[in-house]
Image (cartoon, rainbow, N blue to C red; front, side):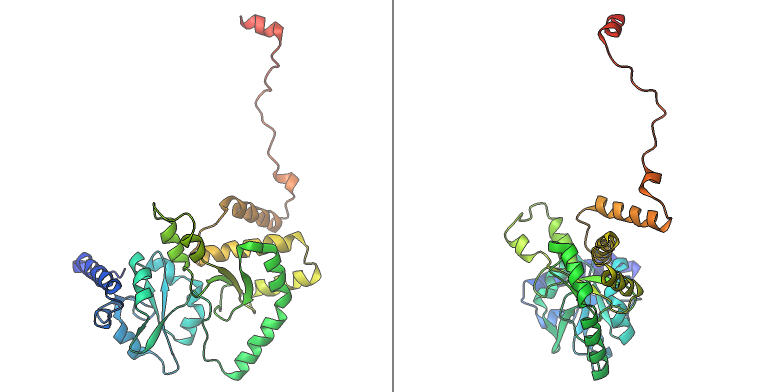
Amino acid sequence: MRKCHERDGAAMANYFGWLEHELLHNGGNLKLSEFLRYYSTKSTDEPTSLKDYVTRMPEKQKFIYYITGQSRQAVESSPFLEVLKRKGYEVLYMVDPIDEYAVQQLKDFEGKELKSITKEGLEFEDDEDEKKKFDEQKKELEPLCATMKEILGEKVEKVVVTDMLSESPCVILTGQFGWSANMERIMQSQALRDSGGMSSYMASKRTLGLHPTHPIVRALKAKVAADKNDKTVRDLSNLLYEAALLASGFTLDDPSQFSSRINRMVMLGLSLDDEEVAPAESDAPALEEVTESNMEEID
């Protein structure tokens, strides 16, 4: 939730929590929503209201953008903010678990729909030249997307080119109607969560989005063109996916595999062979073979 001034922070935090609780039980009551406060990309010193947010919106901005996450620190460094900040669009930070539930009730404010920036379907008002260029980039990267989908298999629903990034090579997007990464984390932490049924249905359908002009993506595209069965292509594809998982707020399915891939990449960077890092022979003396004669000595 939003941290308030230090002297009355706890009281105000409880107040905002009560507001969101009431919002949940009053079908997104507009009057209550006017009192909600959030920190944002443009309001870093004190929380802002939705009304003030709307007054700051550029004329061509259609939606109220928000991001949910475990903490303010986590969302402030999220790759999802990259393009939105560059375009001058403000993004609200929703970092209290109840925000995930409340925002499902608060669909819009003053005619402006609330839009999660971590989900698929986010579109911007680009000019025709930008749209044409992006379409060309998507076509150019089709072989890479197909190869990475084949390598990642069921880990992702699809691999696509995204215009959401300006610095990071890739990101994990979720479906419009499924859980966000943050909601998935919240549900996984519930002691009595449903082990199947609704949980499996609502679990995030993950889409790997690639930044089309990032040097890593361009280099991987060249490697795939040269030999898509190269083991390095497989390792790099998995490594990019796992790094994107962490940056997007997910947890790793298999941390040990991620660690092994990182170690292999480090070895490659240091020009080391597997044999050079094989476990060293133990300096401890070998155990003496137990025979009938030395068993008698023990007796």
